[in-house]
Amino acid sequence: MRMVPNINLCRPCMAAFSFSPVSSAPVDRIYREHHGWLHQWLRRRLGAAHEAEDLAHDVFVRLIASGQAASVREPRAFLTTLAQGMVANLWRRRAIENAYLQALAAQPQELAPSPEQRALILQALCEVDALLARIPAKARRAFLLAQLDGCSQAENAAELGVSDRMVRKYLAQAMLVCALAKAAVSAQ
Image (tube, rainbow, N blue to C red; front, top):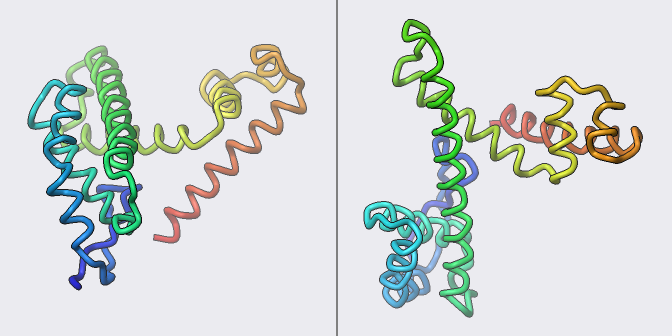
């Protein structure tokens, strides 16, 4: 038995490490038998060997962190599920980064943030995106209409084709997710 990190992967840049005993045999077996296949699967989807290798590594880190390696009956299905989510996150992050860089290009050069500020802003944007992704689709749309477009509840209801009461329910759902996320950050 060896000690492996239990990683909080929800916030990769602020990962909290705590150590717990975990048998490495199931992870070792899954890695030996499926790493090559996973790398090729990722390479076909991403087109770049280095990105595929990075994501394959991250998939196995998440497998270790899940503590489920010993109970995985279909390793390829399990690894595929993890990898699909990570590929989607990568593409979402790229889309956010591209949108941010386009907005940045429209700014006067003297207002451009430093590389460090850009990295921090991009990280914050990705965290906001991850938070918004946890809100149900209709509640997210209502929240964004209210917060970004400044729509009233009546305008929001008309846009979504629902009642004012339903808009209030959607906004309450979104605010609950935001409040829980704020409480989680405050607790750290």
